[in-house]
Length: 380
Figure 1 (cartoon, rainbow, N blue to C red):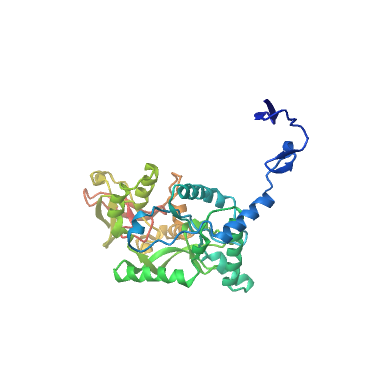
Figure 2 (figure 1 turned 30 degrees about the vertical axis):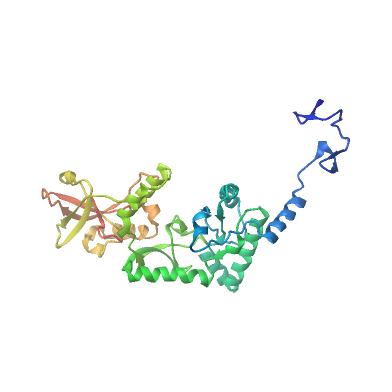
């Protein structure tokens, strides 16, 4: 037996064989050993066709009760559903989907019945805007985009159970989101309130903070303004304590649980009232987690959205305050709170607030890093 060398690696060969350009019979096929390559254009479509026809990755139906249910091992691998845009998949999609696909295949080999579905988060502003611009019904463009995404995912060889595919635009799906909302409403967990939102007049809709960049809409670059608007809210704060307690039961990395705790934002403190010197009938409600420092308060800040804020502004400061409030209304909450930045801005109202503990007068400011729409729009 001799050792043959190919590309710097060695492997044993039976008998005396020449590993040059001579064609050898290898695994039942005549092929140039030195130039063998993976023929993906032939191999992949062949097996993807087999997977489709034989429903290789179909999740078995589990009996609702009985012995069979107890004996089955089940595993659920859920991906974040993509928004089916007209441009198709981008590299970030398979980057995440590959990990869950590997895990799903691994679990199948371990004997689990794996539920690994795919769906489409298909409602959204891009579909609405495209419909307005082209006069095409969003149902048509969404279906076309979904077909393209599905085709691309199949070409990638992902092991999804396509029998369980769903779309958020399907009435069989969103009737259940409507049902959930009704249940929340019945429990008093859904209510209407007037809160500041990111309003884009050009798009005619409210935008999330992530959709506003430097005071303009991410899509189209249109001006965005902050304005109070009556809308539906959910009392998620009613479950804050339970969410915090149950985090300890999760087998998650501690960094993720810390992020969740910070998002819930639970804090314990004291609520105080500061009277306004020039307006005996007005007081400012503020919240602090350090009540022992009240004697050292040097100023009080109000949110630009504070009700009737201009009534607290002196004549000499009206112009500067009005300009500052106008500019603040063009910023998103993210821009105003300055994530990753320590820069703070504000403008004096010209009025003074009275410290309820020692009676000292402190200046009353307007600052955009104080967010309105809360029960306590003041900040020490």
